[in-house]
Image (tube, rainbow, N blue to C red):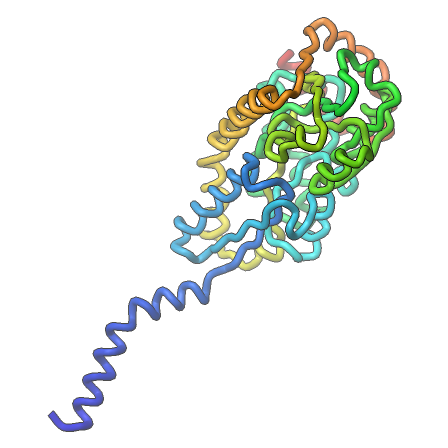
Length: 343
């Protein structure tokens, strides 16, 4: 074999041996990167669901879509993440409905008295039905994002306090109460004669320990994943005042990078898994309550007749809620029709 032929042979052989590596490297270089912002801890069920979802997307797309989750508000708090989606600063988020009422007031339909301490299936008829569809359509226009599927459940929201045990809504009179956001939750705090305070979730532990507020509205799992008994939480009034949900969205900027096959994949993978994610959240809420009790948190569960009496008082003041939250007549009617036809 001549020197020229030997060199040619070695070059071809080396190229053949390197081909699998180069192919993998090319796929990695060509991958569409997806950055997702969440402001809860990695142990939170929302974070676990989104991490699982993005892992399945990467596998199903054979590495073409590669996701990265930024936990604990490393990029944005949920109160600010819709602006980041709008401006293309982040590719994906799953903010709570209550954090987006400034852009889409109809997200606050969850706070209507008809949905105070709701049976889960009844609320799902609203979230998965016509009221949820209207909210999704409005969000997609206002936030310039695409809702990838049905909402991710967090669970029942309750009252939590540091010094005063609450045994009825009257016991909240005069307390400074942190709201996670949204006019509807602030309305309810004011309705029980509390003083609303809106603080981003990542700042809650320090604010609690410093006495910035006396209590707050949240869920058992959110309290548990942040270990807020270490910041002074001692009591919970578990009235299940609303059923909290996150809305999974990707920005239009990111969506435009995908072909129709990749878009369908993202929708299909979510549709195949959201029921499991909802079940994961339900289990985590039950486990969280047990963990909180083990760490000294005392729970009060109001009887059904007390909840019903409180709901009736809120219904009587519903016109004020609708005015303050700027709910549209369309969303109020859709919720009324959905609840009324299945009550």
